[in-house]
Image (cartoon, rainbow, N blue to C red; front, side):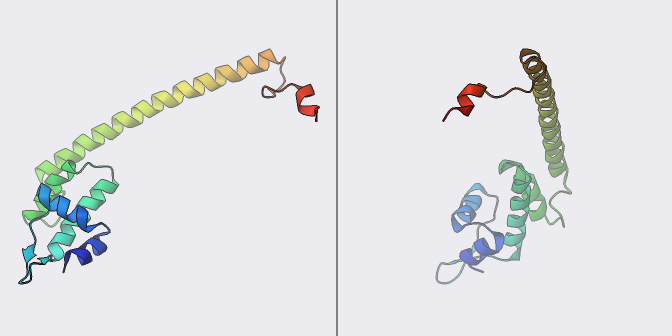
Length: 140
């Protein structure tokens, strides 16, 4: 298949394909007699692996061990030791992000609770009414 067809089937652009090829993530395409790049199903399989990992938040370089695993003939890109290590690092990174988000959430919840108590106390127990006083809201 030609580069445009591969790009369409993979849901990407020809520019991206050329970029991946320049990084060595995709093997160079065969060239037909007229000089056109010719790709096969293996190229599509590698692209699908890269795109799936990127959709999960993996950086482009993090996809390399998975692609190399596939290119080595393994049926899945995540069965090699290097791929498993990338999974472990990504999982640790995600766990750290989740922990940080939980900390921030707890801080925001505490700030909200404090602010609600202060607002109720300031208004003598009534709900806060924005910054406008009753007379400003009622005037034309």
